[in-house]
Length: 121
Image (cartoon, rainbow, N blue to C red; front, top):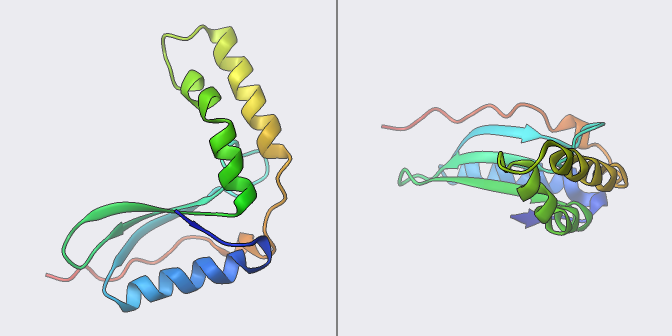
């Protein structure tokens, strides 16, 4: 996870991804969930290292990182098929309310689909 202040978030994400690409990492995909109504706020990327190691890289503001930490218990309830439907709905509502309190970083909507590097043999 990399965290950037809201005012430099967009430039920070783009710079970090460009640096990874320049060093031979393949950014396979990026998902920007700083969207209206989303219950998770962040940018998640799937990356392959030059040695072939696959990993996920998450980008957050301090507030989005904290929100995910605070709501993790509700997230576990939400994804637990053994939890009652009522408990899962309540967990979803709490997460959605917390996510709705966040302000998106300026320019974050410009972080869209990331073009992967060609995969090297």
